[in-house]
Image (cartoon, rainbow, N blue to C red):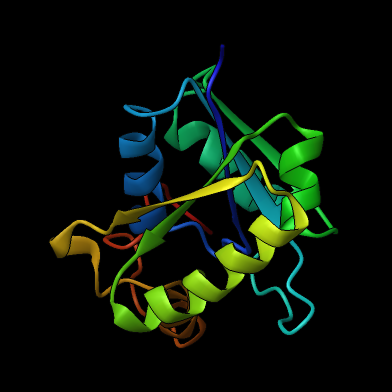
Length: 151
């Protein structure tokens, strides 16, 4: 049976930390669906279409990596796409507290859905989309934080 994981996030932008989680996740799962979600508490900085294009390029169109956009509950979207696992990266204990609560709610919504946490590689732990957006907004070079080039 194929093991499919759903990797949700706003990915605004998709960072080297996110790419690392997907690459390492491919050692555990047959397929990873990257779900670019709409966070109702955030306004997007980078266009979804541009991020999707760059994610595809970062994985050289690997058929094991699929990318979708969604505007629904993560648990519902995971189930709809046949994923039995949600994949999440943890940089620190603050991430764990936040992600743990979400994973428990997702499990209540879909009882067969398991959340798998991977600890971020140490050299990538300081990277966050929020920081990368701020750097970009003020004209700083962000190429060392993202796995593609962005205009």
